[in-house]
Amino acid sequence: MKEIANIKTDRLLLRGIRASDIENIHKGLSNPEVIKHYGVSFESLEATREQMDWFADSRQFWWAICSPDNKLFYGAGGLNDLSLEHKKAEIGLWLLPDFWGKGIMTEAMPLICNFGFEKLGIHRIEGFVNTDNRNCKKAMAKLDFQHEGTMKECEVKNGQFLSVDIYAKLKTS
Image 1 (cartoon, rainbow, N blue to C red):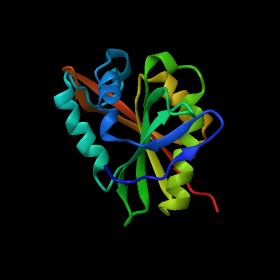
Image 2 (image 1 turned 60 degrees about the vertical axis):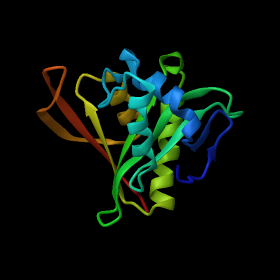
Image 3 (image 1 turned 45 degrees about the vertical axis):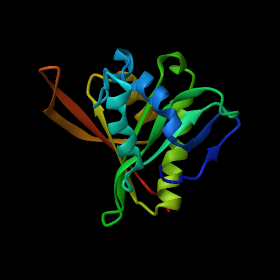
């Protein structure tokens, strides 16, 4: 795995994802509640290695989101599909259900955005949210992401067409 700088607050530690996180990543990305609005799902630890390889790609900057003492794994979040040419990336984040509704997402997302704007020099962070994911849409609005539109029936999941809302946040001077 590549080295990514830790980000720490009083409540959270965002640290680079390690090979030893595979069980926690599998626990999240095989959980029907977590993957309901998420693009991937893994039925085994072996299949989860595909996600671990993806995290290690140079266009992805993802962190394990943990308790400050690194004893509890809450989920993962980061920036993916980084384009230095266009100075943009896509934000993503998921949490294990035990940690939903505790303000972790709304604390972690600004840390990730600030890293992108300040350390990576990007200008635009995009978020693609399934239209029926009300909680994520509320979080995006709360964090000053602007709704730019809806791509109607642009993805298929479980044989059903899904629409995706596009959100973006621009770096302010």
